[in-house]
Amino acid sequence: MVKSLIGPRTAKQIQGQAGEDDALDYLRQNGLVLVERNFRCKGGEIDLIMRQQAALVFVEVRKRADNRHGGAAASVTASKQARLILAAQIYLQRYKNPPVCRFDVVAIDGTVLNWLKNAIEA
Image 1 (cartoon, rainbow, N blue to C red):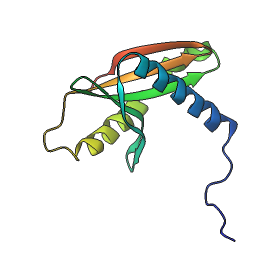
Image 2 (cartoon, rainbow, N blue to C red):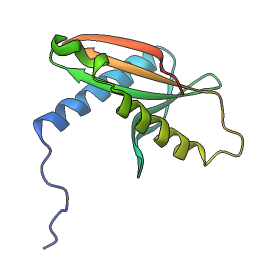
Image 3 (cartoon, one colour):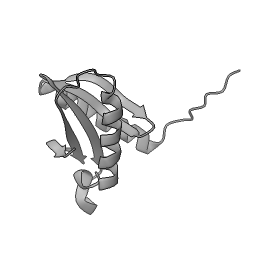
Image 4 (cartoon, one colour):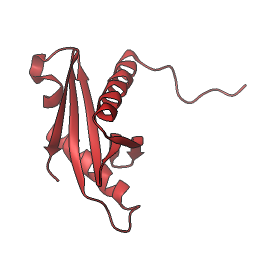
């Protein structure tokens, strides 16, 4: 019998996955196309990589039960932004001529979803 190295998912992981699912549905309804989901590298992780026309869009999804303590958008700290930028740089190494890129945040506070375009400067 082979044991899985990945244990059962936590409630926080399940909530995060649901938030990513909601964000993905919303972005698709607004014309974006999924390129890759949960890109992981030594530098960090990118929740969603989407394409909007010729632009590649790196999307950080944050979900909170409510907007106390600043809400979901405020939880994208400077160190988180730096890890996202590093992960994007690593991802872009696969392109000979990288496309135009931007960083968006989908912040979900309770049931309210906000799509913040160009939320992170790189």
